[in-house]
Length: 405
Image 1 (spheres, one colour):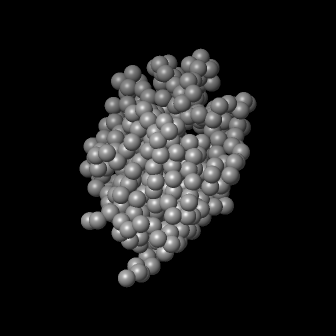
Image 2 (cartoon, rainbow, N blue to C red):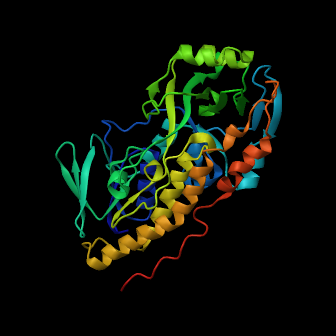
Image 3 (cartoon, rainbow, N blue to C red):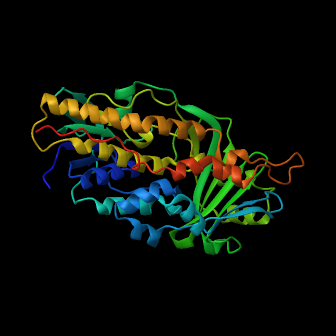
């Protein structure tokens, strides 16, 4: 298949690699520029909802997901002080039947590796930090920190919450602090033998919440402890966390929680910020994707799945573009039209998810006045995200315009 147009993706995180894979599968010539000196993903576990996994399966990654991710058998809410199970909801096959695709918990690095290895060799260029770009009306010229330059027909900013592309397209903005931070980390399950390796666990206390779920075949557990934070910290998901502070937050909790916290040897503190939804993502031949377009709080577990959906829709909308000819005025108009179509499909949906993440998910669970049992029900947690997980981003896409002859 002859390449269609040159497309450059800035950022080789999961969103950027997903975009590159989706576009490569459509026959485009794709180059990804990553500022880090090597291609790797840090972090711990994450959620991959059915709305994301259904797309990755279509891209041929189903077998890799089954091998390295975990399909939790159930979700449990447990009482924070005594540890008793308040409610248990089966997942696994039941969620597969309900939502039409698996729900996975997966280590971030494992998914990142899957996507990177699915790309043609040489797609990603590391050590390449974008400093500025100029849309000339014919091409987009890129300037990098090492003083090299490049030209492209389409530029996709997948460079995260501090996106250079976002600032150029949408102007400066202000991060919205939630008043909370999340301690995150990874523990070998044999360090906490009392906890299951196939269940998503949630404890909701008076001020803090603790979520624990399996990754890497259940051999490891990811923990996410959401705690109140009076300080506006550095907006980073990798700031080192203080183990004494983490221990103090959970000192009065049940033995299972205390044994897990005691086993933690390293944690990162993620100050939870998001931003107000943008009124536009695209300008000319430039658009945004993933966290650069819609940074959201983690309470719906949808950051990665929404980026995968973005990638699928963007690849569809750009599929109308023709061959490797220079970007004529007509071609430029078609590029701009395609990016507007992509934004028209995705921006209303991600805005709803982004705003819903602020007050949804486990935040609905609070102890009763006696401080013992958690109020709220499992059904409310599931209902918060069921419409998101049921969504098939590729089901109702706009028809492509006829290609000019």
